[in-house]
Picture (cartoon, each protein chain N blue to C red):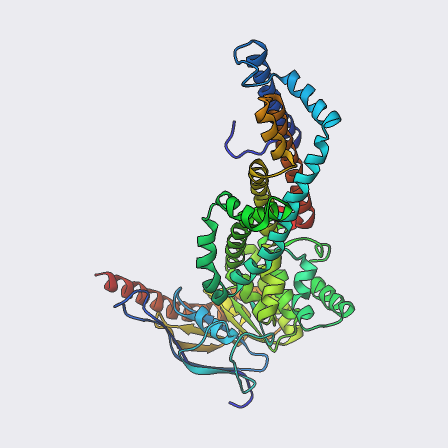
Amino acid sequence: MTPLKAVSPRARVLLGISFFVLFVAVWAAVTFSGFVSTIFLADTIMIVQSGWKLLAQMGFAKDIGITMWRVFGGFAIAAVLAVPLGVAMGAYKPIEAFFEPFVSFARYLPASAFIPLLILWAGIGEAQKLSLIFIGSFFQLVLMIAVVVGNTRRDLVEAAYTLGCGDTGIVRRVLIPNAAPEIAEILRMVLGWAWTYVIVAELIGASSGIGHMITDSQALLATDQIIFGIIVIGLIGLVSDLAFKRVNQRLYPWARL
Amino acid sequence: MSNAVLSIRGVSRTFPAAHDGGAPTIALESTTLDAAENDFVTILGPSGCGKSTLLRIVAGLDEPSSGAVLLDGKRVVGPGADRGMVFQSYTLFPWLTVRDNICFGLRERGVPVREQLDIAQSFITRVGLKGFENHFPKQLSGGMQQRTALARALANSPRMLLMDEPFGALDHQTREQMQELLLGIWESEQKTVLFVTHDIDEAIFMGSRAMVMSARPGRIKFEREVPFAHPRHYSIKTSSEFVALKAELTEQVRAEVLASVLASVSATV
């Protein structure tokens, strides 16, 4: 193998899929051989069966739907507020000086530690889930977006000034379009983190959702259902990530040149 | 001079010390320079002599520590569309196509789209980029990027053009091609140009006046009219007059390069 040499798209997909196959094969091997007891790790057929049962008889699809709406809802609120603030901080240094220390501080507050407080403030309803996702993603988004916008090449800004751009024109026509692909990448990444927060919120206090199903299954020692739930989260994450990537590539073809 | 388009009056620039207790750097000593309508002034000098600083001050991207820059008698206080600039680094907006890059300044001024496209198309043709209108900058060679940058600056119809070693990053053949292209445009368009370079051939071939700046702290220490008539053909580069002028300027620049080397040696001893 030559370092950094590109691999063909076809080979890339095949290689990516073959690891999944290998992973499942090893899993099947250790469970069917009895090497690991199915109490701890359900075998692959049990997973498929319990998955079917969950979806067909226990209304798991509804849980999935609820969890997805929480993730996208909380994330959308965070993004709608974080993008303008991040851009403003990246563009205007006094605004950055005002917010940056607090946001840096808030970023290190563990979102999960807010759960008891959020339950007290917002109950165990949707508001609590949305606020947890908001806390978990908002501050990260703001900081990363501010950095990306602030790192705009100075010579591009200067070129725009010599073409007659004013200060707001620089933000609107240089800083934002220049940072847009990277902002989209940041959103894609933080959306992945939002998934962890929603499950944590659902594990602790919820009456629906994937995380709630997992806690219920824990009481029944149904490892097959727990694993199926985890796999579903992974699959949704994978699909939304791919979709996000596609949209980014469509929107910003120049960024990949 | 009242008919000067550009008047640089006693402009100097001192950069504060990089660390406490250090000495401030005088990048540019009091410099005075006038450029008349359609003057093509080329400025030569060793690297670090402040020639780019001077150009940036004229562009309004840097502020002079003393003195003033006047454009048509009006003091320059910041960057503006009246002074188009072409940089040495590639400064096309990577998210815009060639055409949209050229329209950038026109759009800022609110020129109707139809008219923007007409102007852009005429400059695309002038700089020989027909067929590349919808390419993104990263799909272009360095020479093509600089041609687009030139078209982008000219499309804005600035009062004058500032060029900071615009062909410095290009290979020799492309650079000569670009010189002829720019000269051709200047001959037909007529524009006041301030052109910074370290290439002596370029300074003579392009300029109606060539200046040499001293080693840091920079100042204009030598000036020559370039006597060749327009339109100029590249073959003049081998004429005896050209060679003689080149020899004279080389001598001047060399002295400054040596001086700057000596200065840096004595500073480290």
